[in-house]
Image (cartoon, rainbow, N blue to C red):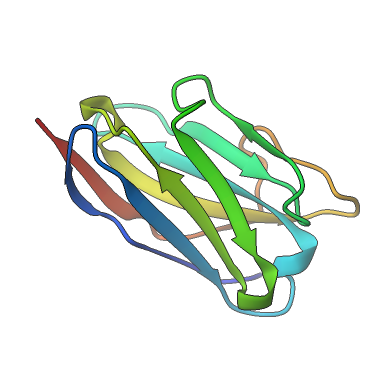
Amino acid sequence: QVQLVESGGGLVQAGGSLRLSCTASGRTFGSAAMGWFRQAPGKDLEFVGTITRSGSNTFYGDSVKGRFTISRDNAKNTGYLQMNNLKLEDTALYYCATKVVTGDMMVIGYDYDSWGQGTQVTVSS
């Protein structure tokens, strides 16, 4: 399994922006779809979005659509989650995950093979 490490979390005011990174070890990152998830205190894990292994297609959950953008740089084994116009309700622990796939497909949902440890994002008023 690939190891994933998230970074870039922190404290930001509402309306601000943050960019999270997800760096993968190993040689399978370029063969894997990548997803982002979040979990707020007392709430279930929420699907944020996903990107195909080539980076050509993305899909987002309704709560972040139009504000968050997922991208990736396979040469750097790194994926990104750009978060703009942050809201108080975006406060959560954010995780990235990957799943090796045979085609350039998205994985919409929770069926991922490898998960990071998470990075905290806190949005203040």
